[in-house]
Image (tube, rainbow, N blue to C red; front, side, top):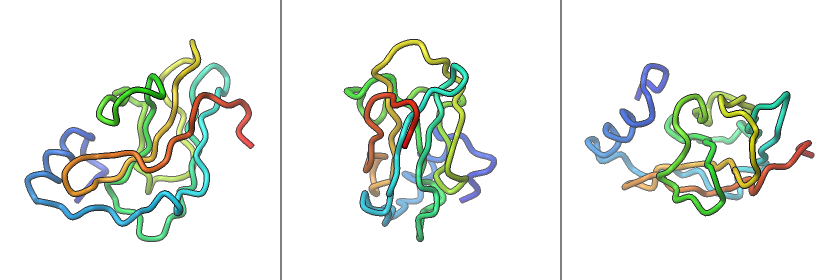
Length: 124
């Protein structure tokens, strides 16, 4: 799957159509997950060196810790996990309650396996 040219919604359609097997990434493999405010913007930090990371695992920003896994903030507020360790979102820091999540394909839908919890500044 060529993730470079696809948005998340297109990837979901393709995963369903192709009956793609589940990602093997586990919560224990995601060693660090943090959400920080940097110069007024949310920045997602995560351990991006996970052996066997599927090209369709992703990290995203959610408006609250109670938001369902299918309600991430769209736009430039998510990134493919295989792309690296940090990602500056397009959401300005306004209120607390946001969190970052590491999302995997479970064979039927995306679900979170690791959550950052509420905003922490600075990440340690």
